[in-house]
Image 1 (cartoon, chains in turn blue, cyan):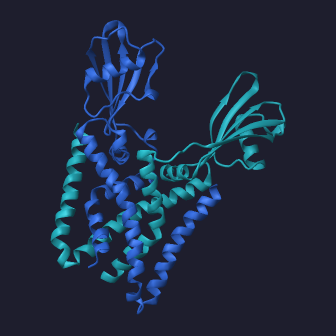
Image 2 (tube, one colour):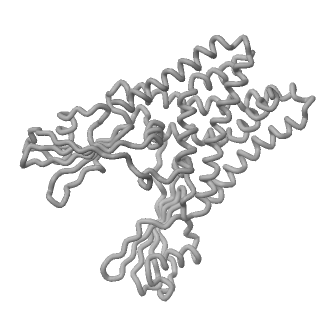
Image 3 (spheres, helix red, strand yellow):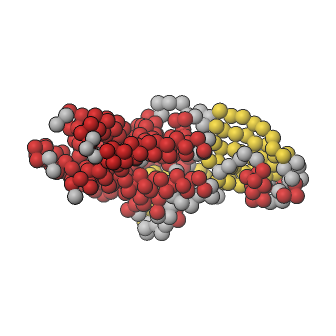
Length: 203
Length: 191
């Protein structure tokens, strides 16, 4: 067996988990209603006493709360989630792959409200497929998964290219079955033409 | 059976190879942002019949019929003084439209994104609930790709399993991948 064939085959086997995740995410994202239109699992609400320093701006305060709460898998607050509500309490979100923490800071009372909104299974899988190394914090679990997803993205490219190569170099072996070779050519060409035509039309 | 599965793997793989490349490259760009995704911006006026543009939706319909604006209509806002803002967007092109009711001209500010951004858009456009039909057609292709990935995986495992000399190493790799995946998915869910 050729080296290229081994690379093609073993790349697929090594990435089996993420390829299953990618396939499931694509199917469920296509056929299910959007996550915001699906019934969400029940949320839980908790309160915690926490010293709230008075000399921090909103971003520093959100980072301080995030560090103090030390919720696993969370990173410093994304800017776009922060706002002040009608009572001037700071609100922000701390997302993780499986759930979202919605934080409200009651500065006057040194109190924090934590609303934990779990994701449904398919939203969880969707979030999993978006985790990549530059978008994770220092948590080793997220980093490990992120690198696996990263490797799988490169592997998709590698498998597509080695697959085409294997077909090209094996074509003479199929000469006793010209119909199969013709269908292979049609498949490759039609797949490429559809993408190029789509690109052209939408531009 | 063997020939059927081998042909399926070959034909599905070749058909989807271009789409898989689009997804692979866009995933890398998603992750690293190695290439500039800054749009080219331009502004131009378009003619409007004020009698046809009495509401934001009516304005949008009119523009979609009479100009080269195409896509989903979103971000509709109506301000005091009859000013309307709306967005018409399709993969790679976003048109911000500003119009004051009664005027015969609307101002369009177009953001035209580069090739790499278009790949990102292709990656993240899915489903069949788009106003713009072309996006729904793309959604169907995405569904086909996703099913195809699983078909490729299943037929690929079968083809590997039929190679007796490769079973030992392959079994170790496949089992490692599945065990690792299940453990990581469980850990990340439980954390």
